Length: 436
Ligand SMILES: *Cc1c(COP(=O)(O)O)cnc(C)c1O
Image (cartoon, rainbow, N blue to C red; front, side, top):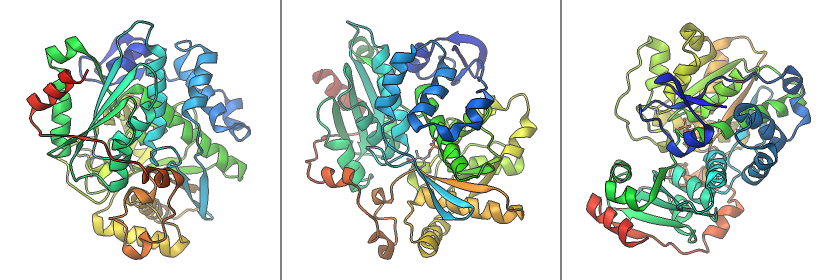
């Protein structure tokens, strides 16, 4: 499969180039030149396949011969080695738990697949890959754990001091091996500015093979389609085939992958884009005006994005039929009070603890179902992170009911190792140059 830039659909690069470049020179995003439609036999019999089997079939159709089948199978079996179950909360409300990977967030799917693909494409004798990543929490943990121990790669994570949760900080700082953590005296935006400047610094680029691992990389998008197919497969097993997905959205990579799965033939009835106060997309769906704005801080901070980086991919998928977009996606937005109320309702109704991002997706689904009046669909809302990652956000009476997964128990025994740096570029650059 070749990939084009959304800014220049006549450009063509290989999958390998798309993965290593992350973003085309023209600042568009990579998309497959054609989106393959999976055969009906596969779609109708999805319930007969396991998650790794589904992942293999989907990836093979998307990638063609870019990675030979045997190698692709090894990558997938290694990357997608945890479950993504749907769990019934009501007769027509299910939660898709995407937090059973090592960092307890759905970003594990993307990070684990991308790291292995990058390592696979590195050729003998090539320079080690130096991944620089700025994080406000979840991305860094997934990337760190995704690349941990992956040969010929090194990850440097920049995170804002005092602005990530305790568990997130442990995930970033206790890995050792090929992962190092820099605690920056500043905000997430400062961290991001440092990384951006490093990519344009000639001296650093001469010395290192720098790459980013951000959410726009096509190798992070592709594996996120897998769990939509797999969730549908699980619903089929329960005799349900009219599915609506509600997706808590920030950069719109997650829902973008869902739409890609739909374009590949997954017969989803509808998608719900659920956001916090950063409601650029819900506003667009309501008014037809796409107006990015500065982000505002909320309780669901992994979705604090005012200018969603993956939106251009969604626009690209609908470019021939803009009116269709409004029929396939609805937008809902909720403020922090509504988010807290949703966390409480979910606990009261089902004795289920949801993280703040997940709670927004649930509320959006409930509102959508109410707005529809008809009730022949099954709603599946995506749970993007384990609630234990956000103990300070959960109401105290609910926080006490969170079951602590084994990934966290083992973290607590480890020691934080991070280098503290200011937010000036010279200090950061010096650190990189001195610590080859
Ligand atoms: C990253 C993240 C999101 C947002 O996902 P996008 O793909 O950026 O829309 C939602 N919830 C959690 C917990 C996240 O970490």
